[in-house]
Length: 182
Image 1: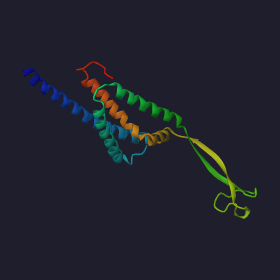
Image 2: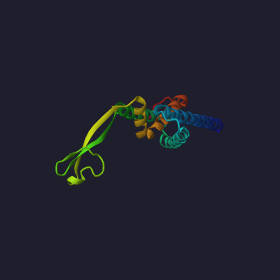
Image 3: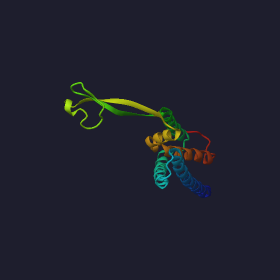
Image 4: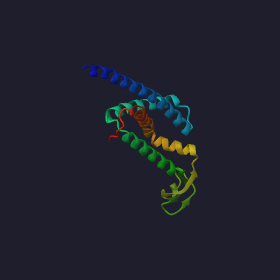
């Protein structure tokens, strides 16, 4: 009986340290993600909103992570981190140019070609059969590429903070148990 009484305060102390670690990880991950997002996209006007968005996402992610990762395995956070990195890197590498089409004329239903591009372009020739389009493209700057990628995959950014926090937690507090469980 005395052995259990002495073990109980150690478990509570370990849980308290884990909770403190998670709070600091939450704060650091929220701030660094919001700053990183604003830096990569070049938009600093919404930093307060980004802090709220990332804070909510990390808070919710930490709750889900603490409920689902009861095995305290380091494998799941590493897989999540690698998956998010692959998706964002692949998308960044594929996002190199911006393409658009411009209307430069019209072909009327009777075959007449007009350089008009607006309403009524071929009104005296039976209307527009089809528009003549010209394709344009331009290379995107690195900042524009990040903006495009992060606009599409913003929801993956919390994975970086949550996974990193769980991996760090495992490294700091995993000394007690050296076994790797899946």
